[in-house]
Amino acid sequence: MEKKKGYIGDFLSKKYYLYIFGILVLLGVDYLQIQIPIYLEQLIDGVKYLNEGMDEIVGVIKSILLLAVGMFVLRFFWRYFIIGTSRKFERYVRSNIFKKLLSLSPAFYDKTKTGDIMARTTNDLNATRMMLAQGVIMLTDSIILGSLSIYMMITRVDLRLTLIGIIPLPILAIVALSYGGTIHKRFESMQKAFSNLTDTVQETIDGMQVVKSYTMENERGNTFFEKCQDYFKKSMRLIKLWGTFLPLIELMSTLGMALTIWYGGRLVILGEISLGQFVAFSQYLMMLVWPIMAIGWVVNVIQRGRASYKRIMWIENQSSEVMDPNEPKKADLSKEIKVKDLSFTYPGSEKRVLHNINLHINPGQTVAFVGKTGSGKSTLAKLLVKMYSVKNNHIYIGDYDINQLRMKEIREQVAYVPQETFLFSATITENIGFSVDNYSQEDVEQYAHLAAVHSNIQDFPQGYKTIVGERGVSLSGGQKQRVAIARALMKKTPVVILDDCLSAVDTETELRILDSLNEEIKNRTTIIISHRLKAVSRADRIFVFDEGKIVESGTHHELLETNGHYSELYNKQLIEEEFKGGDNNG
Ligand SMILES: Nc1ncnc2c1ncn2[C@@H]1O[C@H](COP(=O)(O)OP(=O)(O)O)[C@@H](O)[C@H]1O
Ligand SMILES: [Mg+2]
Image (cartoon, rainbow, N blue to C red; front, top):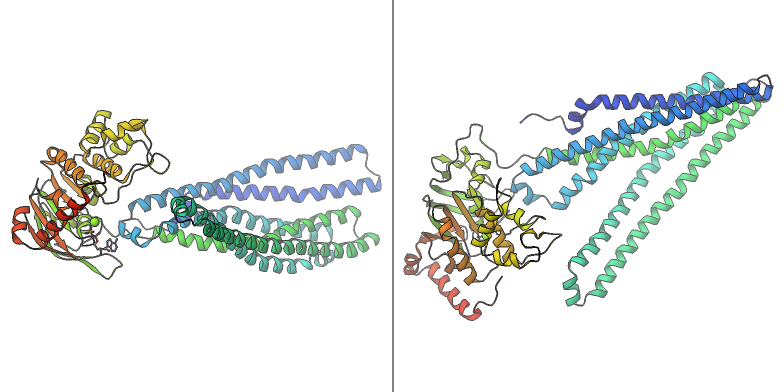
């Protein structure tokens, strides 16, 4: 992988000229702005000494209007170049981060919360963008406008007056800097209170069923009220701060004005400067207030942006726990699968979850993993599709160690239906077909049929066009699982792994579905993981898991005869079945 400088470095090395344009335009705007007081000065002095005709006055007005139009045009361009470029940066980072997220392995998602990833990719990205947009603009603008104003005050008016007029400005700068940090902190805590508030609302609405059935309305109401109150208090704290900040700034600039009038007035009376110069000077002074005020803000935006940028780069610098080999061999999953003396501990965890696993699956065989919850069945299945990395010489696919093969190639040849199924917000047809490039409606229906979900789908008013997922119709757990099976089988891969993916249907339905799949999976290597032993009794070989070990293996009959774990579990389940009599039908 190429070495990254970081998103900002990479982006700027390609797009720096847009910023240069933007800054040049900004310089242009500031230059024009600085001209206005000069015209004003001419106008005032012209009127006062009556030595210019009305034509001259109209001429000055025209020039001022022209300057205004010029500033109007240029302001559009700096916004376009600088803010527009920051939006380009945002798009650039967003798409790269998303690619990165797609490339990271499950180990990353085990240790990182969704909320954290969302915060980094939204709030932090925005703070970084602000640094590159408003931050850059205000920084350059304050520097350019500030120094141009002072330069004009000194050269066009008077040095002594300038020194006196700007006395309050350092104090203003200190005020702006010290308020900047506090305003930001209070703003953050207000934002946090707001997101607490919305979380409470969302949780309550999501859990409305529970709230109602436990008559928790009052309690939830109180919680909500507390959060509301908290948000209100934090907003008020911010308002109070702004309430003192803005008047303080005004006070300082008025002080500057007072000093100017006092000393400048004297200079006018003494005839050392003209009235026009005096007016121009006051205008320059006013122009100075805003850059100084901006300092506090800019420092903040930059500090925040840098912290956020680090948090974004944290994602970029993650490396996938599972790596592809440099010189991959060709994966062929239609060959045998061998596991030799495999032990496994999840990354970042202490507990060993698989101990010395040995097994051998011949091409086309149907094998079953059974055992209690937490015994390591799913873990082994995930390792076979290279979701987590294992050491060399423990898992072989055909002639090669799994570490010699590319994960993409392995997964393309395996239809893996996980325990927790997930459907995207799309039509049922799209959900079933999405793993295949070209599919027809007939294919989709054929596989829905095989997975025994066709008739359910037809009962929906929109049939196969029904949108499922978060914003659509919610399917029952069993229906979702069957849609997921249809989706997996459509891939027509040499290996099929069904990881307890019929847990939400009753035993009879599970048996019926597995029966109807029989023809379809006859020639494929199939691993069925189920907690129901009845469902797997016809497997060619059954591996019994217990606390991360394979404690028994054999066919159903062999295992029953051994009178060990398997037969004990089997008899227990038979009795349970009798009691329940199959009352849920997914
Ligand atoms: N992502 C994970 N990180 C850490 N431990 C895990 C993870 N997934 C599962 N485990 C642990 O591994 C053990 C085996 O889990 P699993 O393979 O899911 O069992 P089964 O599929 O047999 O129910 C359990 O103790 C479980 O808590
Ligand atoms: Mg499992």
